[in-house]
Length: 241
Image 1: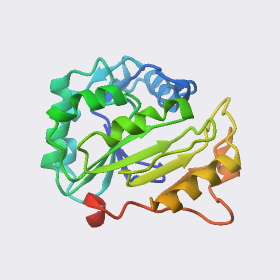
Image 2 (image 1 turned 90 degrees about the vertical axis):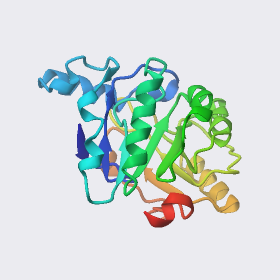
Image 3 (image 1 turned 120 degrees about the vertical axis):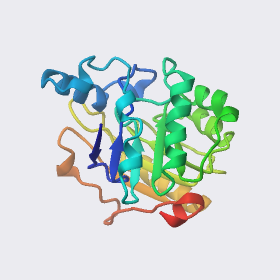
Image 4 (image 1 turned 180 degrees about the horizontal axis):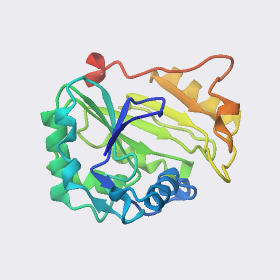
């Protein structure tokens, strides 16, 4: 239930949950859904349920056995704060992350309402970076929900970026931007990305540009104005990562 990751901003993935449901326009062409059905067709036992939400008890303790410190993206194939994920299971995931203090865990959700509702019940460890996805301006409320939590490192994933964004980055430690990739990928505009970079620079927030995306994303690369942008957080847990 773990793998070395090709995602530019992490090193490994850990999936104690798999499966999800669509909640906003960014979910329309979900890469995890495509991958889950592919793995189901291949007979991979962890995906016997396809993309239906599934808890994997056997995967919970996996990071405790990984002795080399690394960046770990949690639930690349699901959403930890999905409405059907039991609160007890969420707490157990946080318990493992707290115990595996030598790793840095990156948790990303579109369910910012539930994140905020559970915030007071979570003992937030310094090695957990909490992020929300925002694909369009009408979902910027997720940033406010994240900002109101007690997570020690907070980040935004603006991917797939589907329109221009104006952001209040107070209390935000990192911003990732990326265009949509894969079949039927919706195009991203260069000026949208440049505007977000300027906002990050103005508000002194590290900016990471992941990709332009497209049906053949490797052809489009990840250069913005002639260079790569791989800035990372410098505060909290990030300082020792």
